Length: 256
Image (tube, rainbow, N blue to C red; front, side, top):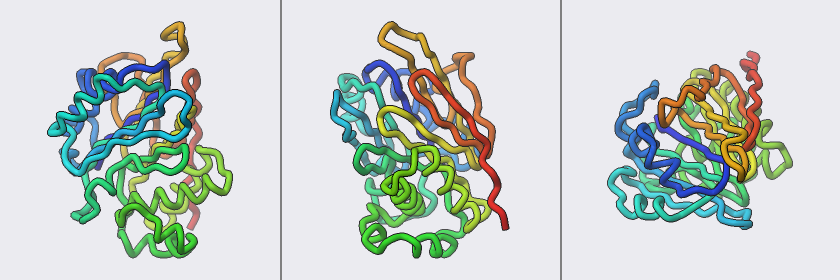
C-alpha cells in the first residue's frame, strides 16, 4: 500500500529524484520491487517541495495515477528544490476523498505521508480520534486512516514535539489501539526528515560530500536505483536524517 520518498540536498529538478532513476517513484506506481502489500499504486499521487527561503511547501496532488499525468512530467522537469516529499497511493479501501486523501498531507512547514493501513479501521481508531480536539477532527482533509494518523502527528508537532518523537509516539499509540497495523510514516519540515518502519520496507541513501554545495540524503520505501550505498532500515525503527547524517533508533512494541 503506497510508496513514498523524501529528499534533502542541493536543489535539483524534481524529475531527477522522482522520474529519471531507473526504478523511480513513477515506475514504482506500476512496478514496485519491494512492496509487501498491494501491487499497483494508481489511486492518486502527490509531491510537496520547498522553494527558496519560503518555509511553507508547495504541493501538486491528483486522484489518478502518476503515469497518466503529463503535466506532472513537465512540471518535474523544470521545478527545482532541495527538499521534497512525494508519494504514490494504493488506497486501503474505496472512498470519495479523491486527491484530498493523497499524500503529502501538509500544514505549516510540514509534509507528511503514511505507507500502510490502520487495522480494523475505523472502529479501532475511534478511541484515538476521541482524544483530539473537535476542531482538529473537523479540519481533517479526508476521511481515510492516513488522514487521522496525520491529525495525531500534527497535534503533537503543534504541541512542540520534535519530528522523530511525534512520529514514534504516534506509531506506538496506533499499534496499541490497532495491533497488526502497518505504520510506515514519513515527515519533513524542509531541513530534516523523520520516518518510521512498522510493517513495510524503508531504505536510505546518504552522500555527505556528494557535491560542493553540500550533502544529499534520500529516504524511500525502496531504492530508486541499484546504487550499492542504499541501506535497508530494520522493522520497528525510527529514522531521523539531515543532509549529512542518519540516525536509527529502535521502536518499542506497545505494552498490553
